[in-house]
Image (tube, rainbow, N blue to C red; front, side, top):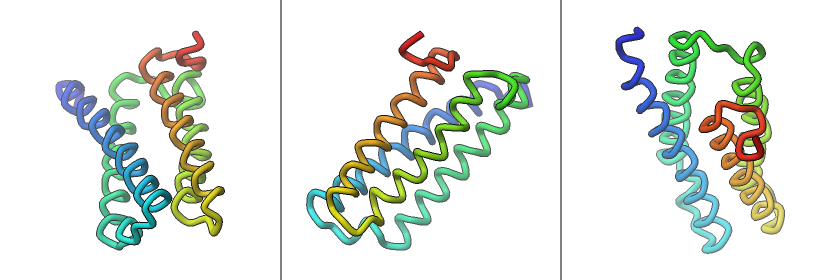
Length: 129
């Protein structure tokens, strides 16, 4: 599997960017324009599929590089921040009030950005390191 490190890494990065872009696109379309298509089943399934690919590639990478969440600080931060990112993404599309949806979308974007900087820096403080 180590022979495919670069390919798996590229799949992981592409799926991260795709996942974030999908959430941002769906959140903005729904909250700013009232588009109902963002809640359609095919788009939800696409998001789930991209996220499954992302997590599968992440697990493969942790095995290859032998760095594991809860053992390596920067990976721990990434895994822990996935929980608020998922919750904020859910509320960005499902909350009753528009203000709550917009604040949740902004929060999800900030958490996504911070996770990205942690991944780039390989440091728990991300851009603050």
